[in-house]
Length: 112
Image (tube, rainbow, N blue to C red; front, side):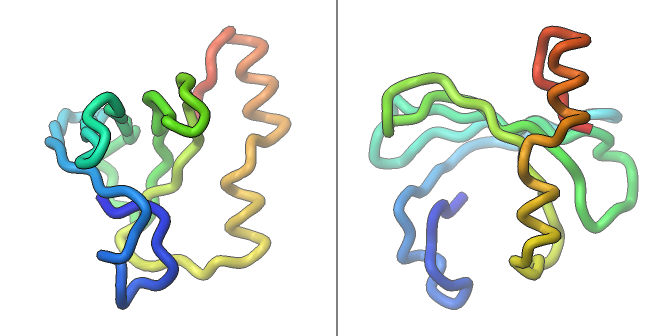
């Protein structure tokens, strides 16, 4: 995985690179990766409903951040195609009132 790059044509010029494995199951796909420069940092992405044929899927990205050093979890939208970076996409990626309601109800962050 290439993280924090400026343009898709030069994705190799990125801030971080990760290498790992993908495990597919009926209802879930897990991606486990390790930072190639800082082995201390390992991240996992879990994507729901991997069996559904959809161009985008929601998932949860979690692990240890090196800036600052702390555990993190973020809502993540996976896509087969490059998405237009507009206000509509940004609003989808933000934690919504519904996300907070579910957090309070289940006492955990769930992304659906």
